Each structure stands twice: as C-alpha cells, then as structure tokens.
Amino acid sequence: MEDFITTLYITFKLAILTTIFLLLIGLPLAYILSFKKPPFKTLWESIITVPLVLPPTVLGFYLLILFSSDSFIGKLINRIFNTEILFTFKGILIASIIYSLPFMVQPIQNGFKSLNKSLIEASYTLGKSEIETLFKVLIPNIKVSILTAIILTFAHTVGEFGVVLMVGGGIPGETLVASISIYNEVEALNYSTAHKYAFILLLISFISILSVNFLANKFSKE
Image 1 (tube, rainbow, N blue to C red):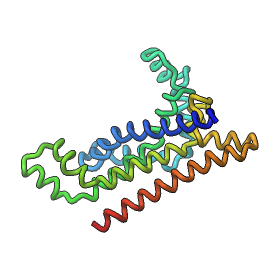
Image 2 (cartoon, helix red, strand yellow; image 1 turned 60 degrees about the horizontal axis):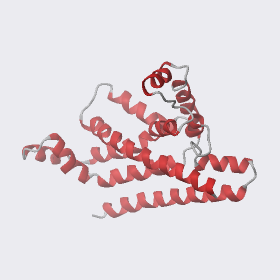
Image 3 (cartoon, one colour; image 1 turned 180 degrees about the vertical axis):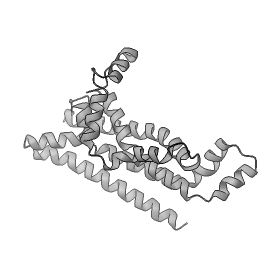
Image 4 (tube, helix red, strand yellow; image 1 turned 30 degrees about the horizontal axis):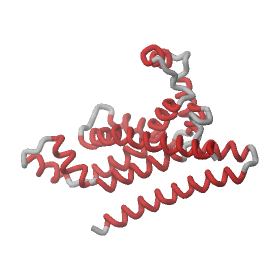
C-alpha cells in the first residue's frame, strides 16, 4: 500500500510541477507567437508541435543521449550543478515539460488569435502599456483557453509513459509513475493492482475531458 501511495504521489507531483512550469513558459511563448511575429515563426511553431506526432520513445531516446554523462550537455550540467539528470525526478520533470509543451501553448495561442484586435488598440489608446494590456485585457478574455491548457497539460502528464520510462527508468520512490506501474504490474500478473492504477488514470482523463467540454459549453453561451 505504501508503494502504491508513493507512486501516485510522484505521479501527481510530476503533473503539478510540469503544469506550473509550462504555464510560466507557455503563456509568454504563446503571446510572442501570436503578436510579435518572431523570426522563423513557422519553424518555432513546428518545433513546439512535434511532440504531438513524435513517438514518445523517440523523444525519450534523444533526451537520453542529450543528458547522458558522455554528452557535452550532460558534462556541462554535472560540472555547473554537480548533479545528474538521467534517472532522477529532475530528469523526468524536464522531459515532461518538453513533451507536454504543445498542450499548454496551443490552446493559449488559439485563445489569443481569437481575440478582436480592437481590444488591444483600445487599450493602447487609453494609455495602457503592453504589460498592462496583457494582464488586464488579454488574459482575462482568454481565461477559458488558459484553463483548458492547464487541464490538458495536467492530464497528459499524468498519463505519460514512454518519455518518463526512457529518461527516468521507472525507479521506485524516485521516477516510478502510475503509467509505468500499470505495465509492471501486468507483467507480474498483478491485475488487481494494475486495475487500481488504471482506474485512477481513467477517472482523471474523464474528469479532464468533462471539465474542458463544460468550460467550452458554459462560456460559448455567454
């Protein structure tokens, strides 16, 4: 029972931290892509979207190579921070942030794109700065998109398997999450325990989709 609770704790800890970090990263990134027209915008959007179509094991494999102790990046991180990335919670957190990035950026970016440009022009006319316009005008008007992005990112991270397994190795008490535990328990023919994990993930997925649809229907009527 203790192992079961610990695994769920790591799973939800990973999902919550990934969602928080991605909100801090994804919101300004979506804003820049929507309004700033950065150089090579199409390329950046494609890079962000790649995890949606890339097999998780492929991304996990290249992260494994990137952060290995033999790579330049791995050696640099070890030298500066005196820490390893692979097979640690830090590693699966970084991997989850990369893998779930489009689930945060795309809904927010779509929300920004749906706004009437006259809102921004009116805000500037009234003397509001760009930052004030972002936080007092734009963000309040795309709160549904932001909530949708948060819900989808959280749910997607909870169910991650391939990337987390490749980078974290499924170490009990450190990097073992519920999705990997289901696989391990089925291999050991412990269907009862596998069912407990699977039911929790199924419930989270259903509640997440229900929440997104509820928000979409609720605010579409307003």
